[in-house]
Image (cartoon, rainbow, N blue to C red):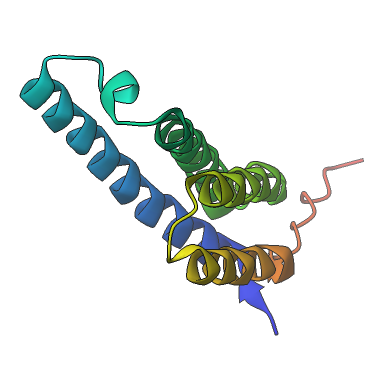
Length: 128
């Protein structure tokens, strides 16, 4: 199964940027409603840690996805690290949907792992 690394990277970058935007909007709404720093006022320490881990995972996935979409094979590193951080965040947060989230993260990881990039074209031969 061959998955285009450029296309997968673009999908990761777009979806992650939407998710990150929603998190930022949600944090701003919490800050406006409570008048406190949202990360500290979300609730338990576990919830705050999961929120911070989610933001870190989103940033790593955004960077990795963008690099992949530009044809950079090394973009898989930040994307994979972002998926690992998202997995840790899911475990820290717990909850009823943890099994589904873990399965989705593993499927995305498998797609990143099998993604292929076109072979670089050699530079044209110069004179002499």
